[in-house]
Image (cartoon, rainbow, N blue to C red; front, side, top):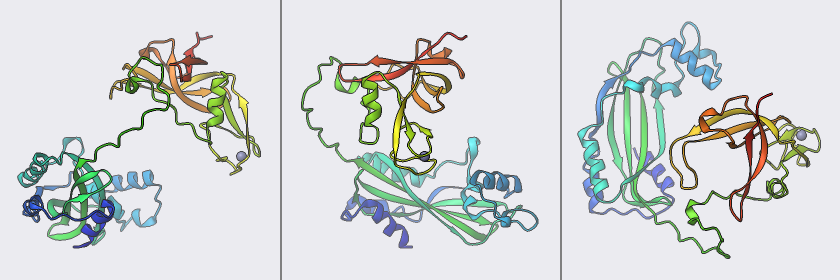
Length: 328
Ligand code: ZN
């Protein structure tokens, strides 16, 4: 049973184990139930196996026909509650979480899971399962912050026979303080508070040419120097042939809305939800994500013709956006 802790230590990134008073209190929960026992919503069945295999692209003949078994990696699928859910966590798990919350370890992140397959599951098997709090780690300091790893283990049974286990590990932690940001070399003239400004694009040597084009009000598409396939966003190499050689073509700027989403949540200071984010297919064939302007967010439609224009956001930033064109 030491594997869990060794792995947790790896995730922890080499910090020192601290066996403090809280750790002693937390370990008292080891071995206690983490959730109430439950049974699978459906027995192991061929339609779910087939859907899984199709989604995974797994055409192993062991999962089809007479004598078929379920893919072992489906183990957790047979235990999931779906929208109607399963019984809640146990009182012991709630107490453990509350102890950590009250001590200031209020954040949580899932770190890894681990499964063991003891015998194949077959159509008709009815699974039952229960969760136990298997282990709590000493206090560890990770890049995310300082806290305790909690490992729960689900035992999956058919009748009395243990057929598999599913371990799930989380880190309950206090976030590390964010490093203070260095002051910018020259303070921007923009009047908006810095965190309310539109995010800056990350410009690097792979995409600098695109932004140089934007500065000249040109929408530049990369073209492979060998096979002439167009690509966007900009990349160092060609996905079609692997060539590292490229030049550019200037897009006409005309395109259509290929798809879009309307953002309501989460709110972000630089944006005023709801707003539409469009995936625009340029007439040249590549697609680009940007705002669709000149039309209310709820009037954006797939297939809507659009034309690029360049939006001056602030003193430092100009962005290509797409204005709805009146249809034919
Ligand atoms: Zn190519």
